[in-house]
Image (tube, rainbow, N blue to C red; front, side):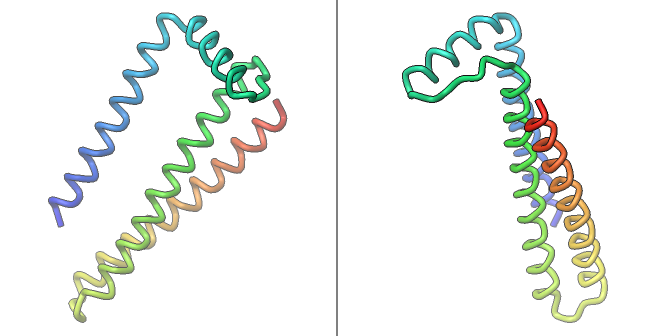
Length: 123
């Protein structure tokens, strides 16, 4: 059980680290990055709004979607742990706690996604 938590922690840390490094690289030359995004949008035939807030709102919505998927996977994991507990009370309690925490996390991420969507549409 500890090894799966360690693997999840390491993968999350790697993801957040690479995400942070990408933002740090873009931060030094942000105008060039937005120009390149605009050129790519023109080539793809996508309408560009030219507004940074819309881009940031889209990034936040994607990240919240990923977080929601992680909590959904945790719900499946908690259910699987409960089903394979073989009647062991400590395993059942642990699985219930995982399910409760994952459901709360999923609800929070859904609410945050809704708020981000509302703010993005308002902008």
